[in-house]
Amino acid sequence: MATAREPLAIRADIEHPELVRRAVLIYRIAAEPGLREITFQRASEGPYVAIVPEDQVRAPGLAYTIELEHLDGRRSEVFASRQAMHTVQIPEDLDDMRERALYERLGGRRSV
Image (cartoon, rainbow, N blue to C red):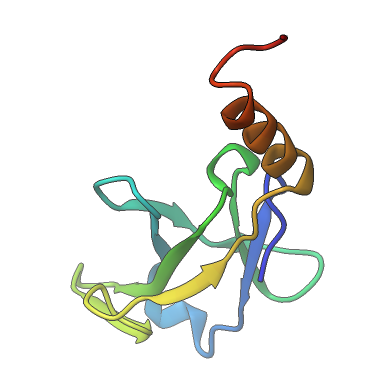
């Protein structure tokens, strides 16, 4: 579970990084078409990290997989897959839920 509108850090440990050109986080935001990708970077906390920007971390969630790109250019899935991605639930912010309920109760008007 993650917090809406806060960066989501995915950490990974890569054994034998000398055999890998790069590690890639591939993710899909719920209710949006297409896949996005972020390359893992060396991190001070844990060996590698990929950070999903805060503007893309929103309810109801996102799904991701991790792939390694080998020196010869081919990719292999090392965590989940594009067909069966790992899901992260992102609950809606309580203030947003209250505002939406008030907006609906007032029939789309901002005041009565």
